[in-house]
Length: 247
Image 1 (cartoon, helix red, strand yellow):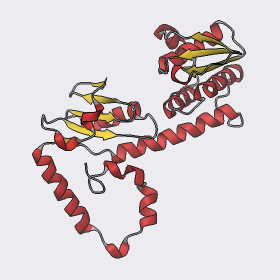
Image 2 (cartoon, one colour):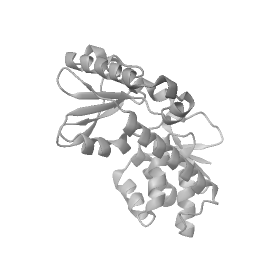
Image 3 (tube, rainbow, N blue to C red):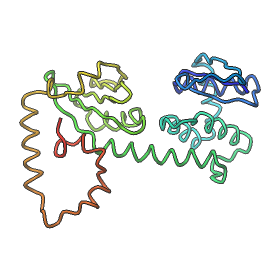
Image 4 (cartoon, one colour):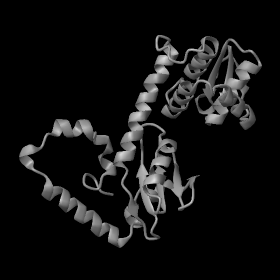
């Protein structure tokens, strides 16, 4: 058994898939370097990320747009062993040319992961709340279940095209920053962002109080349906909402 150890980047994963085909490996598994455990019965091979090889794999899968979408979202799902499910699906589709065979376990698993990531993406787009910082940058912090930040960047760039903003994933310690021209991925000191009050503009704090008062005053107690409310706004998202659990 050969174990291909990659750097956990998407390009690294595609490079590993390229290596499987280039070396015609049959008994192979792909694992992230952080999950590497000693195994005396396997040969560990380090995969050196090569954007050229990664691009060749991605271009080779171009006829299968659905598969490419599922592969990327399965990667963002961060599920244990997802790399090998992806490899199995790639092998099957390239052999059969059928990317919609949900009777195949790997294809079905990718489809399920794709749905889960899609739901998380839509919830983040709905529940992200910005706070105006002292330098007039609008900041939001999130900790989504899955790595959906690359998927929501386009939505917020389009929606807030006239505002400088940053959305930071505290769980994965990286974020996106929009400077009115383009969106960049950034890394910051996440500890400072855990307490937004320290860098929040004074006027923003007043708006928070006004919004919370409005939310309370418009609520009709006799029509409260907690079960339905939790279905549409799960409790794990309340920490993002000013009216529920303001920072």
